[in-house]
Structures are given as C-alpha cells and as structure tokens.
Length: 34
Image 1 (cartoon, rainbow, N blue to C red):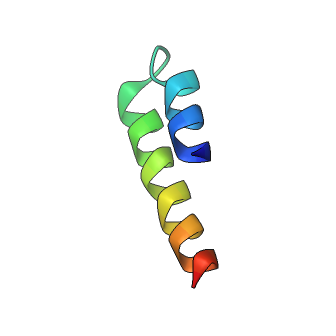
Image 2: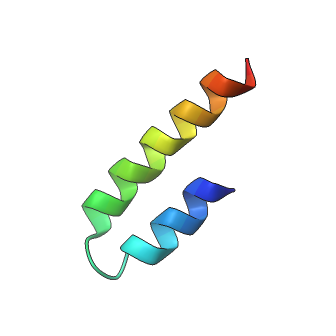
C-alpha cells in the first residue's frame, strides 16, 4: 500500500526513481511480513 503511495507522489517528478523506490519499499514490506 505504502509503495503505491510513494510511487504516486514521485511519478510526476521522476518515474524511474519512483519505480525503484516502490520496488525497495515492496521488498522491505515483504521481508517485514515474514
């Protein structure tokens, strides 16, 4: 959820940076879930 929010905020500024950040947040979320 948070990853999509971060991507939505950064997408207009830097799509690539926003996408990379979203991926990193997703990995952290998955790791914390387990």
